Amino acid sequence: MIRYTDDIAKADEGMLCGFFVGWHNAPSPAQHLAVLRGSFRAVLAIDDAAGRVIGFVNMISDGVLTAAIPWLEVLPGYQGQGIGSELMRRILEGTEQFYSVDLLCDVPLQPYYARFGMTPVPGAALRHPAALRGGAVAHRRDAGP
Image 1 (cartoon, rainbow, N blue to C red):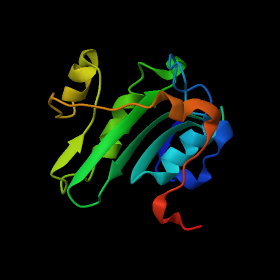
Image 2: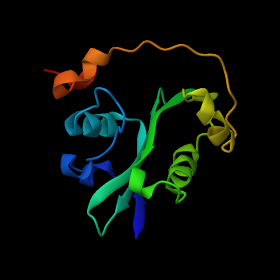
Image 3: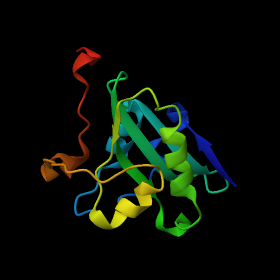
Image 4: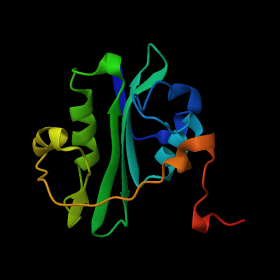
């Protein structure tokens, strides 16, 4: 049975294996967990029988007008079962107060996101692949010493 939750506090690094398939330099489980915990909102799909996270989506936001969805992923063995769609439905729930909810994706994925009311827009991105090496976790500026 698959369970959905936004309670990230109960997740641990060991539950986050197998994600970022095809990435040359994938985030470490520690980085992945830190991203989820530092997000404005995140939703996990958990296979309780396997004791692991099998899908996730996260949102970052100013909490007032704008939000962005940087990651949505479902483990390969669980794809095609509607898990990604349910994760998207849950993360978008209650976002009507935001002026914009942005998501960057490759052109072939745009029809998938159109099902959720999203429209293609021009964009730009800056990537630093070296930030994924070594598994270091950056700390938030407001976290204190």
